[in-house]
Length: 174
Length: 333
Image (tube, one colour):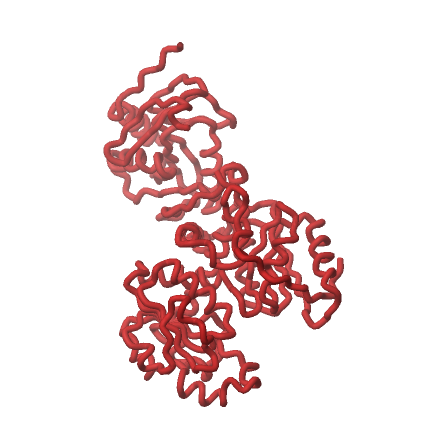
């Protein structure tokens, strides 16, 4: 039996992300960024970050259901919360927020959807957790915590308030 | 390909004609009629449509969900609006669309329909959208297509027009919210209307407070009350306290059968004028599946007036048809 990694508290994770994002903005790596969360976990995380970063424009929300590559095997689930991008994203720096970066497929779908709205100048990926298991060449610029996990384990983020995170095993999910 | 067409031989429908709509896992595979869907599937379709509505507001009005799939519009009966909205729906899902208009006047052997089906199937079609003047045509096709093909009924004879009923329910839900407190009246030629038949099944599944049909005796089926509707022959009584008025298109060929005296007479008694509209609730909405005969079943000032949601119905039709296409072509998880 392998020892499971300890997850940091939500406050620690958010602070780490905030610190990193604030520095990127200060050093002009990100110019007047627009924040966009991915439904549902990413939106919860983005709401917390958006509020604390004091960004002028409202938060964007992406629902990537129609862009998933597993439509043929997993089917379609009704989405009561469609994508909402409050401002034009053309030429903008975008902070794309998700809860966990795992295979990278969600991020690919999100980027495809973003490009159907316009052509951003830059997409910066911020995640609460980055874990191993990438299936696509995608990496995050802002990470709350890096975690090594076997494919038997998943990080489950719940929200919106309180925002919580815990480890679950495959059996628990099934 | 055999383009010379074809009147199918429609066998008698089996006891549960709607069971064929679902695959072995109970997932929606074909949409042929509202019957058998129940409120859970209807609600699921409406919820999914809500998600698709935003796609039409974007600069790039497309999502990649059905990329690489082929949708064939198989229209044995002419229709502009329905075919166009099905075509747009498929294109907004990134499917390839083939429109085939087949005249029903060319009557040949029943087998020819199957021949044509096989030909189109051989082109790797994934979905047929079928409109036919014969009731049961879509069922017939659904029974004979290859297992991977889905069939959508875009109107068959007097039988059913399920996507129209779904888009009407969707329009009502968007404006009025809950169905339970609503009184809905369907006005006109109920007897020959596949739209009315599908609406009655849909609204009853959704537990609409009260469903009424209004029209002359000759245009309302005798045995309709057990379907859960109240019958009125008088507009003033029928429209009292109504939240939603659905006008049906009066098909001119019905006049020839002696079911109606004249268009003018029908308009005088049942045409929705501004004056008659006042008999309904002040915030009642006016719907029409189109195309409307102005001055026959509806006054222009009503069709274009503030209570009319006729054009919203058309826009909503795209989202609802996207939802049905996506759900029928998706696997169940």
